Image 1 (cartoon, helix red, strand yellow):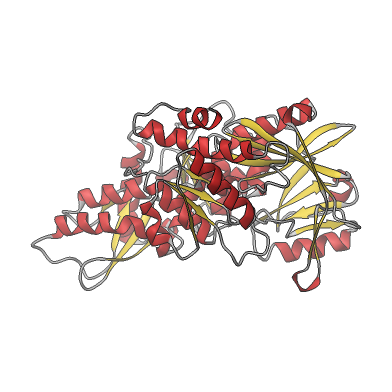
Image 2: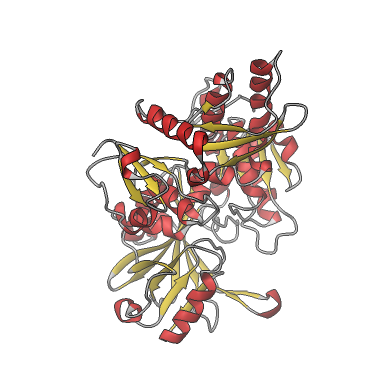
Amino acid sequence: MSDWLILVEHATDVAQHETPHKVLRVRDYLANPRLFMSRRPNIINLARSYAYQSNGYYASLLAEARGHRIVPTAQSMVELSRKTLYAQALPELDAALARESEGRDMPFGPLLVAFGRVREHGLKRFGRLLFDWFRVPVLEVSLNPGGRIERIRPVPPNTLKGEARDFFLESLDAHTGRAWTAQKDRVPARWSLAVLADPKEALPPSSPASLKRLAAVASKMGVEVAPIGPNDLSSLAEYDALFIRATTAIDNYTYRFARRAEQEGMPVIDDTASMIRCTNKVFLKELMELGGVPCPRTEVLDENQSLDGLIERLGSPVVLKAPDGSFSRSVHKVSSEAELKERAKALFKDTALIIAQEYMPTAYDWRVGVLDGKPLYACKYKMARGHWQIIKHGEGGKVTEGGSETVAVEDAPAEVIDVAVKAARLIGQGLYGIDLKQNDRGVFVIEVNDNPNLDGEVEGLVLKDALWQSIIAWFADRLERRIGGVPGQAGRDAGA
């Protein structure tokens, strides 16, 4: 086959005779993680929907886990889902559109852009710039009466008819005739540390007291810490770096802050790629398997699959999980076929795929914090009293947590630390909390958290201020590299 692969939901969306490249159904790509193991295809995802947790979304998300190159990325899908996420692109796009349309009437209808090509003549540079911002096969750009961009939305190719479809197929042919090019980053430069927290959050990843200690330690290291809240997005560019200490999610303000920080060229924990990867258990399942990281026996299910025999394969009980959840929410232990089907049906209302995993009872879970690919801390999180998880959610929002025990990294089992570090390095170079279970069969990764708890009385119990010094040094090193300083100087100054 060629280096290009076209993913479609139905064979009629793009027929095999319409392109010289291999055409494959999205569901077949999802169901076969070891396809193309010996090569790295260039994939064009033409799913009918890019909605969050749709099959189209999972195709792009899992392509990243498999090391395949794909357009659009899951990140582009998320950003184009609402105007507030792509608003940072509009000033540059509007300016380019105004330059090329000066002196002539703009079309009344929306602009159709396919692989950076615009149907209307004279907008070549605008089309390229739009594709540079969002690598999406087909986009529709709606304009307001003043000629400025009102909305940008992906267009499923199967909806295109007549001349519009011919234009799309011509653009597809032209695009695949060129070499793959990576999306460009836009990174203006600036300098100082904003810490994003929500004072109304019931279970924040760091307590107010811990954040005050962080600020005190940072001050001694020559770094100013400024607390910001969910409504401070407009002022984010005043700072040099961003540390998110609110519970992250793809569909809330934390993602918007992280993305804005990246657009401003700011070092950020958590970055958007880590958020997308860590918040989805389907992605993690494939990434860990392909990376050789031990995990419990796991199956990914779609609503068309039969659940018969699942309990026999994985044992009883089975743990069912929604791909996207935090604090043990949307995680259920089921022991019978009837309960399994009932829980699965409820979960499928919100997601195209769910996770079924073997149950591993232990008295505690290990949590290993990994920063920049190196182990930072090690804790034992004990199960909540009378419950099988470390957090128990009760009626009326009541939450019960188990106790904890913090140990020095060097005193933790070597296999626990090694597996945790291996898992974290598959995600990135930020801050991650790796949840593991240890039993007589070995050590297994349960989850990778992009936004792990950091509190002085738990995770910092052994390290004390060295916990915060490590975090500040991570930011300082990256900022110093950008302005030509000496990496690591902030960490050395703190230890002087």
